[in-house]
Image 1 (cartoon, rainbow, N blue to C red):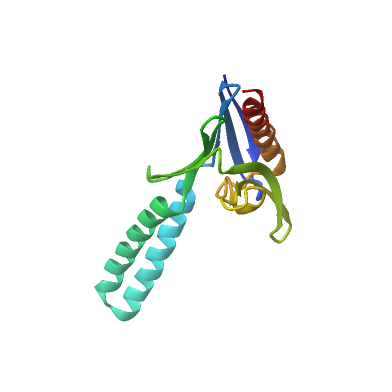
Image 2: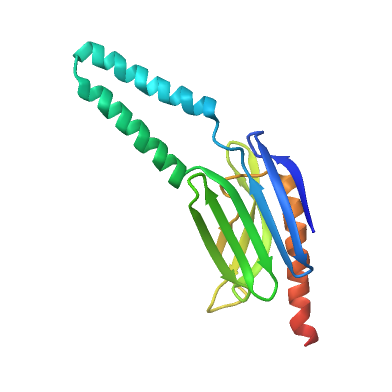
Length: 187
């Protein structure tokens, strides 16, 4: 089963949450951010090139124009490959673990996996960032002392969805974790 819902991020931008229910013990959540705006890309490029042209007319050095074009292209490629994330997903499977994937605008993907034995819980935490914001995070067990938390891993760091979206994901994750905790007890 799959459904899609629209939410907003902490700045008021549009986000899309896709929920995929593969089974009662396996769920995936994908948050998609708006694509790179051609208008903003054009504005930045024109500003850099106009500034370079102004410097060129002032100093009469053609290297300035070449450098501006080169820097603009490298900056754009770097932004698309290392900064602009189009989609973030969270896959939770009760018998295996939790996988987080970030898909960049260039097509590059970054994946992190945590075995279910490492996962203590999934919680909504709050932080003060000019105002109070909420974020979903995975609490990892300390390998030496399992009742303690060794690491807090934030989820959906780039999208920064608001609390209403996080609650949807949190509730579903808790259903899978509850099923996972109940399974070993009955075996």
